[in-house]
Image (cartoon, rainbow over all chains, first blue to last red; front, side, top):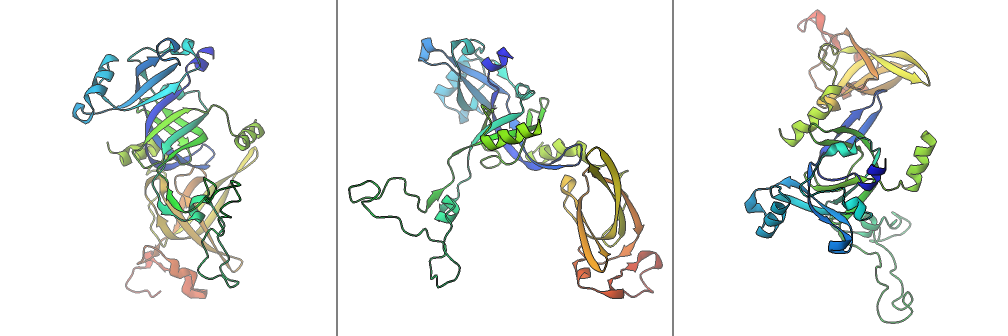
Length: 235
Length: 126
């Protein structure tokens, strides 16, 4: 258990798509299939070398000509073939960093006893969207004399009120604009199955991003409140 | 193996084998044995109806059955590969020219019936 805490279960992966999964009692679960790992450790950072402890994971072989000279050299130092994606995982301290070594292979079996994971990805770009879709505004009445304003956001407030002074609106005012294409973390997804042979991880529900998009999967740090309630009720 | 094949292979062990699923087509009358779990106990309920739609492939395959209960049309959709579908029996072979028999919803009385395939197509009218 102690060792587990030192090495948080985390991997890079790729979203493959969704399907359904029947549990033994016939319950139908929506699941996302993720190709998780195997990842290679390409760099270990300690407080001595970098003033913080972290480990860099790399995933997915890539043709050398698709990589760059500096990256190829970086991967070569760890003794692994060129990789497409590299991502850092912060660790608690040097003690944890000491558990990792360059070129170490980490595969999906690290998730074998994990019940919940957090999945991070870049969401699909939605383009320029109105406030109803982008910020879940309510919009206006369909009738009662509403004209041409059914989906508009309404007043954006006075130009001096929110900040107290100045000719500008308060920063971060929710308006229409580009939506999606940003980093999203879905927390506390149930792990349905782990398949070390084919490097597959099945989680319940959807995850951000397009099929074949990069995902960062790690053991759930803590469950969000309503999920924790559900779990406690189950026990 | 491409992505789609890989996803299908993940759930392939959940599929019912061909031996468990008899041959049937849209228009047939089926008995579907549904496993119902009530707390600890488990019992089987049979739903009999005309297969009016057979949708989806692989694990997503869904059967829509329609029957008349107390003069009221009832439709139920079953995921074929769910373990709650315990057994499927063919009661009667119906003859249908369409893949989806949604027109049956509007039919009332005797016209609701489909031709029986056993009698042959030539000599019967619907």
